[in-house]
Length: 225
Image (cartoon, rainbow, N blue to C red):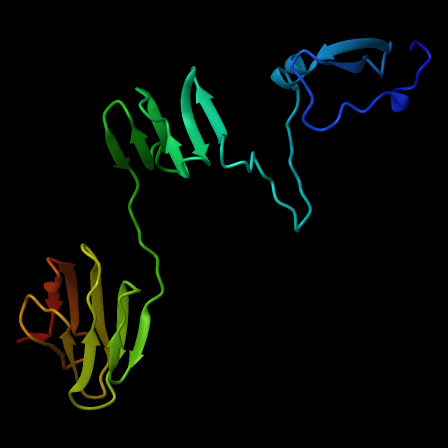
């Protein structure tokens, strides 16, 4: 055994490593090299450097793909701070903890987003901005329910606009950006009347979908009838 090369030793095989198993270490290689040992448990508990995972461009980093197990856990002060649980198909942030579970910081806000378990609160400390591409609608047609804003360009008189039902709590804004006539919006279900008419450029209507219908909650220049 004393004369055996490391390359000639029996391969332990994937999945057979134990915490008490030993690794061969050459201590102080740049000074006075000495052969030493370290347990697998001690090695992974005290890695004195950054750990970089850099797969190839087409590679993936996978943490326990077996859905029968808890896949990934991060602990904080002996409490579970973050868990990806494959068996239950859930991502949990410090379930049942009395500590601050999650904090997202920006340059100007120490707690732009904070989930606090002890207070049962979710706090947004920074301005909340929604960035989304607007629908561009020229002439008659359907105002969509997938974008927050629709820019309407009229190309004739009394052009028919439709609006399907949204989801509860959804807000939709229609802006008449170019006047080539007028547009008459008829939602499928409208709690504020029957139609909204856009006549001039700049006419705007903001609607809220709730109680299975659209309701006007703000407008400029339009006629609601």
